[in-house]
Picture 1 (cartoon, helix red, strand yellow):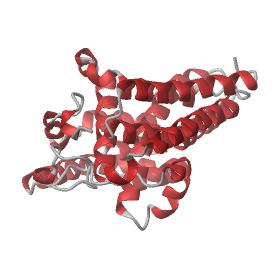
Picture 2 (tube, rainbow, N blue to C red):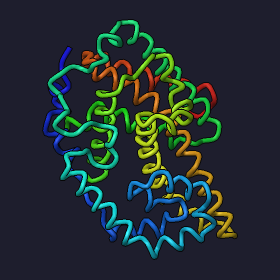
Picture 3 (cartoon, rainbow, N blue to C red):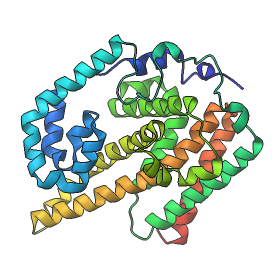
Picture 4 (tube, one colour):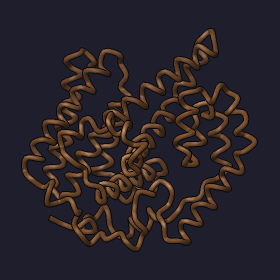
Length: 313
């Protein structure tokens, strides 16, 4: 077994970079508010996950909330940056990593505290079974409807976990860089938080939502996966905007685009969350590379079989 900092993808420099707060800009928040404001896009960008989710499911609070936010947008950006600056000055982790201890307490030269309880060979076999099952269920659900976006997102996540972080060129691409940063945040989370019983990981997205209001660590985990799901759902929503123009009714087109947005978000959350937990904990257990590749291959094979069974491909 190796310590976290023995992983070439996750050195102390990565921790330093993650703890360095990134400012938010009005020049980005404003376009997000204009294009995705009804879905809370600008609030998610500014780390206001709870109110962003409320806007997402209420259509911007019946448009009124969305319109009012334009008057407060500059103030929200300033408050976010001030909060980040104060957290940095006191040694606290930035927003989005607030489930972690202060930076000086991050001991990447030590093994995860839960390693002795979670390192059995049976956990590998259990992961193989669950990853194959999750992939199969995803293929079965999305195949008949032709909703391949969650499958694509899951494959992108797997590739990012396996390869992208090791390619220096990938760090220069803005979107890929953000994905790699997210993968590292996920790895930091499970380094500090016991992943728990493997057989409950498949249900983690479901029960996590219910316990999140009462447990800060569970809330942070849910937020991490929603963060990824929302980003990808918003990106795919942009492509749907072209289809809106083909509808006779603008509102009908928006309603269909919104429905696809929610569907992509839900599927991404439900399936990427358990796969992320399973793969990340195995990586932290420092399994040999071929084991991680095998786990990933089993998941993608499950997706393929599920799609074949339902005639999706």
